[in-house]
Amino acid sequence: MEDTKTIQCPYCKELIIEGAIKCKHCGSDLTKPVQSSEVIQKSNVAGFVALIGGALLIIGLLLPWMTAGVFSVTAFQKVGDAYIFLILGIAISLLAIVGIIQKKSYGIVIVIFSLLSLAYLTYLYFQLIENVGMQGGLSPQIGSGFYMSAIGAFIALVGGAMMAQKPKKAK
Image (tube, rainbow, N blue to C red; front, side, top):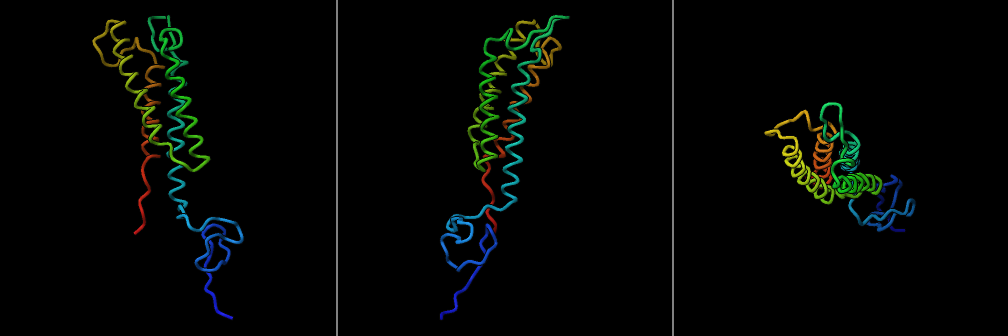
């Protein structure tokens, strides 16, 4: 009887024949490279960052975008384009959740949606500044909801960029 070399399965740690294509114990495909737990953990953190950003983008729509004395207006009451941010916020959040669950990266799509949100928020910022007659800067007449949506879009951008990064290969 020939002496066969055995190694540990990288997934279940059971002994298998060296050069095996599939583990006889757990059924894992041994031809694919194994992701380290560190890479998976970084991917999860990036997904949660993107999820938080998407949630803040949505929550900001429910808070006042404009304030004038005692009168506060949310994005849904004043800005008809609020639904664009709602759709982008939901899409960012769902992509982050699916990415966390499936261990896949949807970072590029999240980055694109975040950049679209930030670009359109910038356009709306100048429209709001023009409406309230300010010269620019942080206006007290622009409400907390607008700023929260902008912060959420930026956080989602950072999370998406983290997800899109390719893991460094070990030397």
